[in-house]
Image: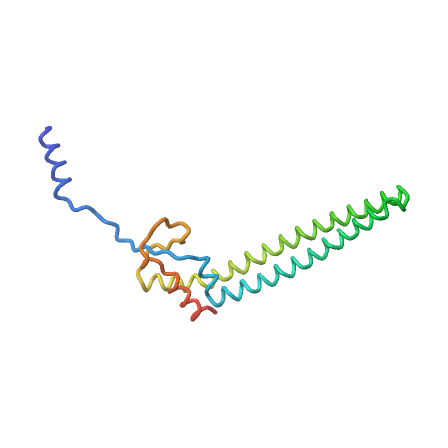
Length: 168
């Protein structure tokens, strides 16, 4: 009985071919696809414009609040304590409004950014899928999740050129 077990183990170890994975794997840098493709550049420029406008508006509001605070501090000795407290109360309310505006703009910007990037990838996914089918790729990974890989497994530039040609 023991001889049969050794014989089976011997044949399994030395005469059976090891199986190798036949999956073809590639990786892509999705951030670079957005930064370098023509539609991605257009989206990033739109987002930068929105962000710049938001920052300019918020900075203007902040300067106005700072000027009001300085004005209140300068009037402190001239006005009555009651008037001073009223002005401080109004300033606190304006600061609270400023924070709400800032939070709303940030939330709205993040929502717009997510929608535009999602729409970009929804349109780019069929292009990428077609490339995968044509090149018999089974798995496509984001470059951020790859520790090391062969340079020829990086298909980022191929995808960028395909997106530039076929993105609608």
